[in-house]
Length: 183
Image (cartoon, rainbow, N blue to C red; front, side, top):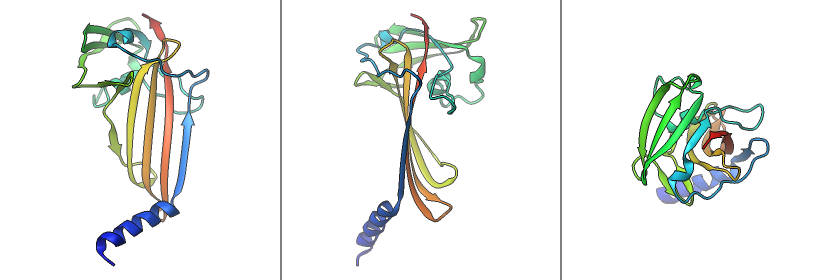
């Protein structure tokens, strides 16, 4: 048997014997994404704290926007102000409770984010999920929902070994709502 065939057979066996698990969590009164045709539709001030399924992890809108920003205290950001500068650029400000600017940055479509199928796709992240020995990939989509609030859908796919013996594939989808405070 060739090495290539042996690897293919092993991979097939791995997936056949794997425990495949998935879950989907959504906030109460969840509604679908609305179709965004122009980034101007995103303009507004949003609550930074995301509403998700009760008793699950929480997420800040600023964490999704400034994923790679080390040292930024997302807890201090109370709201996120989004303004369109031109047809390809959004100016996003993280605001404290008193209205002072904690973080401000311009994001350019095609460079910092992609608008596809009416949603903003953010760059994905790879990682090493605990307690699995393996790898995971997470990607997020942002937009507005049918109630005109901000919405995020995050998908995480992980594959590896649990307790170094049990093949495991996890697929998790979480949705969060960010209340629009004003347009």
